Image 1 (cartoon, rainbow, N blue to C red):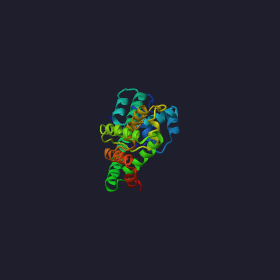
Image 2: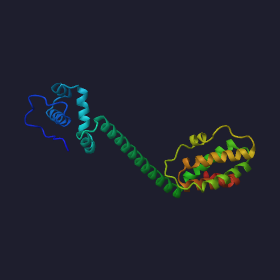
Image 3: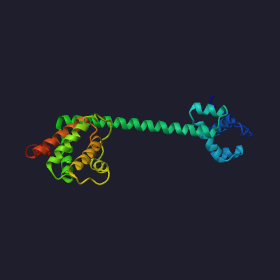
Image 4: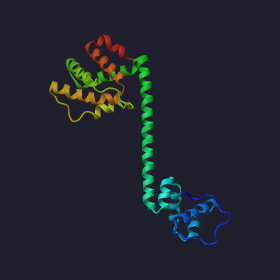
Length: 229
């Protein structure tokens, strides 16, 4: 069932029964088409202007909700249902847009990485600076990166937009770090294993960065200069 939206040739001299939803919607529709204000239409019908505002919302509902109201369903229930559906549609659209942005970002970063290696170089330098702050011995760093390397291979590709690396490293540090060497290694290895996928969702970039970090720890004189821009 649909509402007749054609402007009638003449406006009724007397207002129609305001309790009849279909007739009232048609009256409101014709009144708006004639250029009348909501206040004037409400006055003609002997109703509050808020009722006319609600009727206008009803006329804009999808057909299934409008038909449900005309068949006797609660107007408020159908308005809430339509609002919920609209919010869900907006959420799905936002997810689709975010997914497309992530795909575009990943494709661009992977292309740049294959051509220049700059993303893995930057991440490797970040890891080296972070490790210098956290662990006192090169042997600790080597052991840590071996653990991270093993855990990284189980992660794979992720569809996400890379996050701020410094924020992720801080956010993944849960509580104070242990002071005992082996516990320190396990603690910071867990931090990196959790943070790296968010910093670099692309497995290729993570793998390259971890490999470059390990080489630079083992032989900084040879490999560290290769990482700098």
